[in-house]
Structure formats: structure tokens, C-alpha cells
Length: 478
Image (cartoon, rainbow, N blue to C red; front, side, top):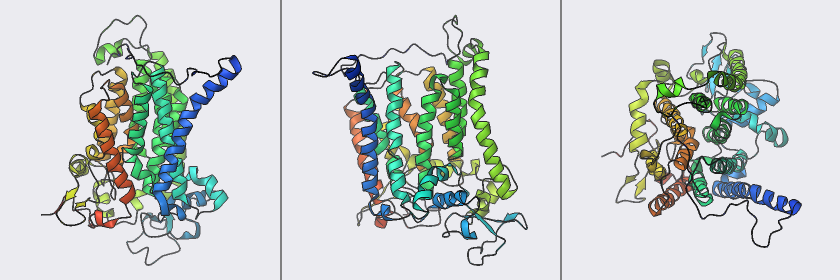
């Protein structure tokens, strides 16, 4: 895992910070011009992507989403309580019910036969509700949360550009400005982030928040330059998408990579790499990294214990869903689910027929390579550095964890759990040194077409989606 020296490829693309023809070059005016260029592009990315997301969301932005659990949880927090305000759930989709008298899940008929002793909760990790709290405080619980999340979704592409620019300026990435912009477009419109950004419902907005936090985590974690902020971002991500927690291992790799002895001889291999690491700086960096994670973990344990009498129970055990028996039998994560989920991950194809509408998609969604074929060059990167090794290892761990989850991401257009590591895959593409030639640009256009179709049709054009509600039909029936 020894890190090779980075040799950026030459490029004719001008530096976006360099003064243009006819622009002032004096200290004051030149500084303002450079600042405008430096901040203008990421701001423009935010404005463009947020606008597109809001426009594609369309009628969804006219009111609250039908599953605005986080708005309800924000209202609960603002009222100083953890359970649902009014003691009753808003609908029957993915609400957790706990019976404190018997310290067990409520009976299956709890929706039809409510009981005053039942306690109803949002079991999804709560940080997105914290993000919503100012808007709920100003506009009330039933404001247009789909519009809020569509605008918020524009932040991740903008900060992704800042991350890629930092890697380019530090000569870690060989990419040009145009290639960085192509990668941002790929993430924003050529991945499942697009269809996710325009939904607004509870399952999807958690991915929007987590994507931004993962990008910020990478910004602070690469090179282990800002341990505390990296830990804060990953801790908040745990309170949004707990399956991202293995990325803590990536920070350890980066702390070790940044703390190699100055006189270390050239060499490769894990043993050589560990032997020539100065461990005191690693321990200090990891201590600063762990501090906010432990504090946030303590808050999570307090909330869980207060609600369910178990510091390690987020509440999914008490979900009032048809799949609860399998969760009780196998748990939320188990190798039992791996084969089923893997088949969707790699073989979820559109169903083709000679009858209208000619194309149909399973409720389990499309395979990752179908929605984002631009990721295929990662199968044969031109060069692998220590930074890339850490990213590959930790992405694989998170991906395997997601594939062991009790469902595939149901209901979805594409494999949305890939957003738990999609920012890392974009960075790996930037570092892969594979040329973004005509073939890759063709794959980028194809990805944009596919994901635009998903963003426009998912949950709106039912004729394109299978109507099976059993979770048992994975592929096109004979």
C-alpha cells in the first residue's frame, strides 16, 4: 500500500483562477476577480443542479411529501419530545410502534386498533430531521419538504466540485477542470442521485443528506489534514445512514499514509507500509477524529435508550411492516440476504416486451452498471495509489454491508444504496488515470438519459414499473 509519487498529466486547460484577458490584475481588483472565479463556479453548480432538481420534482413541490417522517420528527424535537406529536402516526408506511408495558413491538393490528399506551416513533436515524428543524420552525410541519430537499440536493454536486478541485490543486488528481466538471455532471445527473433528489420522501432524503456529509468527510479526511472535522462529518453521517460507518477505517488508512517515516525506504506491501509508519501522529490524529464520533454516538445511545430501553436499538425492530417476521428471524443485516441483493445489484435489467409500454422496471430497481455505466473503468484503473487502495477497501466493506441488509432498497428506480459510497467512486474515477475519451463520454450521455428517465417517471408513471408488492418477483416473469 505504499503511496507512489503523484505526477499530474499536462493539460492545456487554463487555471480558472488565472486572470483573463482584459481583467484587472492589481492587488485589490485582482483578488476580487480571483475570488469571484473561485467561488462563482461552485455556486453556479449549486444553482443549476438545485434548479433542475426542483423543476423535475414538479408537482411534488406543491405540498408535503406523503411520507414526510423527518418533518414530523423535527416537529417532535421542536416540541421537546421524541415520539410522534399527538400520539398517532401520519399514515401507515414505515412507522415504529413500541409497547412500553410489555417492552415489545405493538401487535400487527396497531394501526387499526390504537391504544393510548402505544408509543409511535420515527425509527430512521434522526440527523435529516435536525436539518429540517429551522424550516419546520418557520413554515410548519406541512411545508413543501420535497422542494426543500430538491434545493438541498444541489449542495452535494457543488461540494463535490470543491473536493475534486482540491485534489487537482494538490496534484493528487491528474484531472483537468473540464474533467472535474464532467465527473460532477456524472454524479448529479448520471447516477441514482438524480432520481433520489426529486422524491422528497423519507427514504430518499436521507441519501441526499448522507451524500453531502460523505463528500465533506472526504474533503477533511484525505491526507488526514482535518481529523476533527472528518470525524464530525462521519459521525453525522452515522446518524443519517449508519451503514457508512466503516469509512472510519479509511481515515485510519489516511492517517497512516500521512505519517510515514521521512526516511522510509521504497517498498510495497502492507507489512512494509505498517513497519515504516510513525505511530504517535497516527494516534493523535485518530484521537481528534474519534472525539466527535464518540460524542454523537453517546447522543444516539441516549435517544435509543430513552425511547426503547436499549441504547443500541434505533427502532427498526418495532417497524409495523409485513417484513417484520423475517427481521425477527434473521436480523436487519445477515448474509442470508446477500445473494438476493447481489442479483439485483449486478443483474437488475429493464424488462423488454413487444407490448406497450415496451419497457418495465422491477420495484427492486436496476443494476448499478445499468444506471451508471461510467463507473466501469474502475474495473481496470491505470494506476493504484495508497489513497485509492484505502478507498477501494472501505467502499467494498460498505457495499457488502448494504448487500447484507434485509431488503434491496425497495421501492426504487436504481440501486439507491450505492449512494452510501458513490462520492468515493467518483473520487476513484478521478484518480484512476483512465482517459475520459469518446467512449467514456458516450457512457456519460447514456447514464444521463437513463437517470433522467428514472427521475421523471419513478413514482409518477406507474405503467413503467412492476406492480408486484411481495418483494418476491426479482426478474421478468416468463
